[in-house]
Amino acid sequence: MQCSYDQRGNSVPTILLMLQKRLYSQGGLQAEGIFRINAENGQEEYVRNQLNKGVLPRGIDVHCLAGLIKAWLRELPTGVLDSLTPEQVMHCNTEDECTQLVKLLPPTEAALLDWTINLMTDVVQHEHHNKMNARNIAMVFAPNMTQMADPLTALIHAVQVMNFLKTLIMKTLQEREESAAKSRLLSSCTDSPSSKDDPHSSNSNRGMSCEQTQDGYAPEEHTISDFLKPDALDRLESDIEEKFWSLQQKIEAEEEYQSISGSSSPVVGEAGALKNRCTGEYENGEVEGILDRLSLRKGVRKLCRHPIFHLSKPVKKTVEPLGL
Image (tube, rainbow, N blue to C red):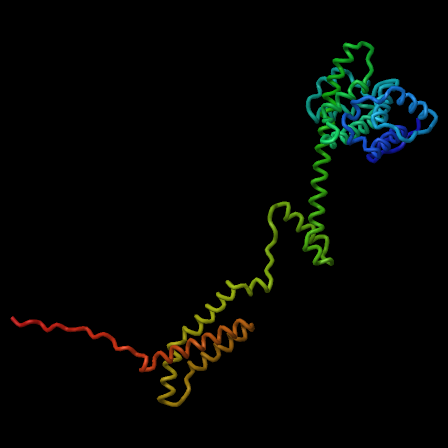
């Protein structure tokens, strides 16, 4: 039989891939009860005859396409899971046990099973449209995966196969969700604003940012704008003010000394040097405003020391001791 490779690299009969592609293109995954509802009488037989001639007609009902896929699996000379004993299938209760059991299948049957499991997983991912969850789709496919002569034994074994298929479907669905989550995380890291602003950034930097995002923290970056915030300017102003007013008393004393002796003092030079050093250290328009306010405050204080603004202090009354 002619085979082709699916997206997962499985060698699958080409007729199955053709039916699958047509089913998906016609919106079969969104059809309610897909693989559960049978096609109209006579249509499936007509399409089967056309397929045997190598022709896939147009306008086929999606339920007919789904029924033909089940019929192909059901009419195999030996079932896909016939190489496994009922006891082996019955004792599979966990995902790991089911995965180990799949490895015992021959390559052809293993490829067909993997293709079928992914087909059923695609159906489950559209459960909100087709009303087919993992249990429902596994129940529909289970009788088509094995062949037994005794109907009662076949029914009992079909229940065990249904649980086996359901476990594999849930495992595949979980793997797809994890893969999609990793893809979203990688996309969010590569499309972050920092990457867009710096197109020449290295891949190592982007990798580091992604790892830090996963750990729940981001590196702290300080820019010049952070130091121009109000709280930073307040600290700058208080720092300069503290340096200036710490020498206020010395400056006032030296001014009195100059008025008497007419010579300058080293303290005045120290104050000037302090002013120049502060101005050179903080070259900013904000610093000039601070210095203006400090000069204004100094002038106001000198003005307040003028005798015209002095208020008379209250004089304490002394009580003469009474002589005895």
